[in-house]
Image (cartoon, rainbow, N blue to C red; front, top):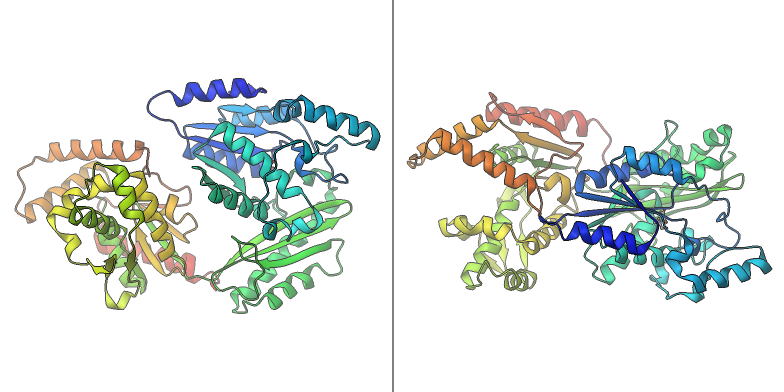
Length: 532
Ligand code: PAF
């Protein structure tokens, strides 16, 4: 693991990595150090998804108010270094303030410090990044003016220095995540923002570097925040989705405890606008003080039915199984393959060369896809108003669809469409990156697999049944092995098993048995836990 404190050395390292072939994906985990299990979960996720993992450690003065804990914020680079090393990080970037902001900004801060006994970089000596006031003036922004502007400035700087493929943030700072997503979307930066679930102590207390300020007794008392969120979830799951009832549940739990609630609010998770009722998803966020320590926590309340995501290697029987599971559970089958076929059909009928990725990008991004999600009326797929349900099954489309699906621009476009289909849930979807990328929060993820031998045997049988079996089993085995290797090492949407997926090895199982297993898992995991 490398440790860099200068921008020049970080740049040199990144350049050497970026120039190596094949192209390496870079995951950035921005932190202020004092690493705990929450940060380690971000690092672990970044490690799973990228060839290179960079962790930045910088206590950013721009995001602290004059009366906040900038001076006291825990700093322990040596311990952070060890933790990063153990977690398989490739490089730490731990710059000084002077390195990040330049000597003149630090000199100004030092001269002000002598007068005010403070040492903060004043934003007026730097270029400003101003996220929408509607997002920075609510929730924590009310009591921390300037905080999110300081976060936006430093994140802008880190993203431009590292230019990562993905950047990882903790969902505990839900307002920060929403503001960073907006920043990245508004400037069209080519980085994926990944929000990782809150990691909690056994008591339910959300992990935070600031928990170090709490005594054991205060830690125990602070866990009431988690119980309050759980009470609100109960209210929500019982069917009352109004802000009034949800917030009342939080307040009742926290009342007459040592914890002083600063706010409890229900807002839209993306825009942070207040919600009166949760239609699809609501962010229930709380901030509280215990002694002099300020803590935050939150939960997303989703008003959607479950999603079942089925991934797995080619030839494991995903499409047949997915269709039948959807039928058995009365859910809708999201046929992602049909979507790829529809755009392939469009390219072919408009004579757009599939090899010309820029022309394809122009074509798909100006097209309009309609997908019927009603399980009773069967699949209906329209592109630009034309019903292509039948046309997409032609041999011509079949022969070109994988070439089309290999374009990153096509995948990006269709992943957005697929997510739109999943807003209300109630779907069973299959695809190579359905559980890892399209629906990472699916309630049930299945990784359907079978040995190379078994998949080759099934494929041979299929070919024989269609009268086209002039290929040997050995050749098929070799083809499938090669395809597996390609699928799991490809740059776009590589085949990976999601960490929380249930693997079903289908060798020796009939289709009916596989379906029974999945339906059983659904009943056990979903129908027995409260759904809204
Ligand atoms: O979440 C944090 O630790 C900080 O706000 C961040 C994103 C590292 C920016 O300083």
